[in-house]
Amino acid sequence: MNRRVIQVQKSATFTGHRDCVYTLEKSDREEIFFSASGDGMVVAWNLESSGNGELMAQVPSSVYALRYVPAKNWLLVGHNHNSLQVIHLFKKEVLASISLPPVAIFDIIWSEKTQLIYVGLGDGGLAIIDAEKLTLKKIIKLSPKSARCLALNETTQELAIGFSDHIIRVLDTATLNVKYELKGHTNSVFTVTYSPDNQFLLSGSRDAHLKVWQVNTSYAEHASIIAHLYAINHISYSPEGKFFATCSMDKSIKVWDAETFRLLKVIDKVRHAGHGTSVNKLLWSGYRNQLVSGSDDRTISVWDLNFSLTYEDYTVRD
Image 1 (cartoon, one colour):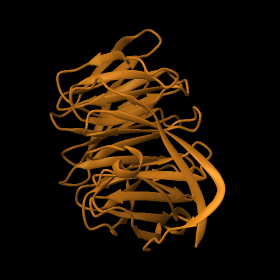
Image 2 (tube, helix red, strand yellow; image 1 turned 45 degrees about the vertical axis):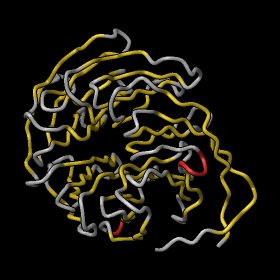
Image 3 (cartoon, one colour; image 1 turned 30 degrees about the vertical axis):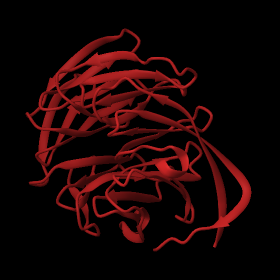
Image 4 (cartoon, one colour; image 1 turned 135 degrees about the horizontal axis):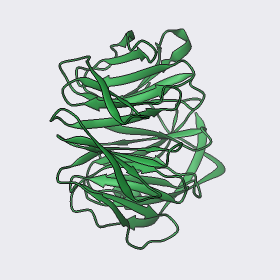
């Protein structure tokens, strides 16, 4: 099958972290993004400049999760084995430090409708935090294994959580009851995301499979693709929603057509001077349509993607 060719060029490399880069997050400006690492540093970077980043926070343990809250201009920092830190970006001060169980914090998500913050914990719990009072409301234990990733569908009022017990649990945000259990993966689920139109839930796992679940048919499995050689760490949609990218422990980034779920481009070390170790996180920025990636190699790469009108063949195993 013919499909669109994407020309890729690395436009920048940001360095400064002293440990693996685990997460990337947007800000209120398209050219500014945040990163966090095993070194406990939270840094702001500017895509318009290849200069040094600005240190936003320094905590004594690793940070796996960040979340920007647009309505409040907050940055939520998951301080592993300690607390959720709330940073007011305009004031550049810590508003609150909300104590949590002494376990890893793997993901954070914010709901504007419910005014709640949801936090996925390493002991299988889901922490629910009141964003108005900045207090912990409750913790729901959903599995004996880690809650690794979260995705929120505000349209259907559903929260999808991927666990290390291989199951994706979809909760009703009004009742916090489990509505669906999706059991297609055979290893830990590291990433889940809803498509921009909320029609599909995409998931990636340590089993190297990309799975597509159809929301309006009770999350029936729509597609299952052997997408990478090793674990899929993250999925990120392009700003206009026509494409998405996956990254993996196999050191590669892959770009896909969001309508057909067909592979369009592989970005790796041999062909594009890509990362030399696991690629942990992606951020597809609205600034010049640039794709940003963070890796175990302690660097952050910025990729310029040019979508041409020519076509070439790839073979994808569905």
